[in-house]
Image 1 (cartoon, rainbow, N blue to C red):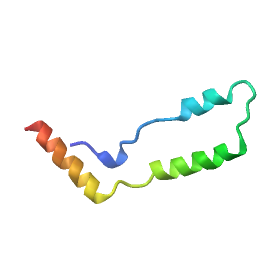
Image 2 (image 1 turned 30 degrees about the horizontal axis):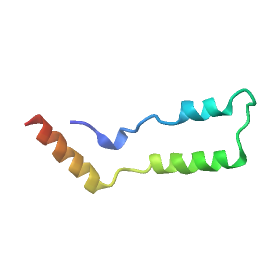
Image 3 (image 1 turned 180 degrees about the vertical axis):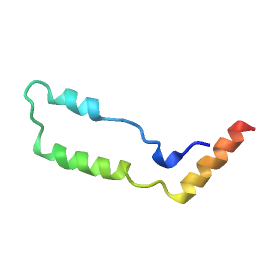
Length: 62
């Protein structure tokens, strides 16, 4: 069975680095936006979503 709570997409890290370019600095708001995004991504999956995903996995196996 898949553990959906630990499954997180690796999104954005390369893109943010690519936008910085050769200058090597980001705008002041970029750090705050990154912290906000990371906080949301690291939140645990609600039990109701986890149960729904389990049911969908079982339906796929049938």
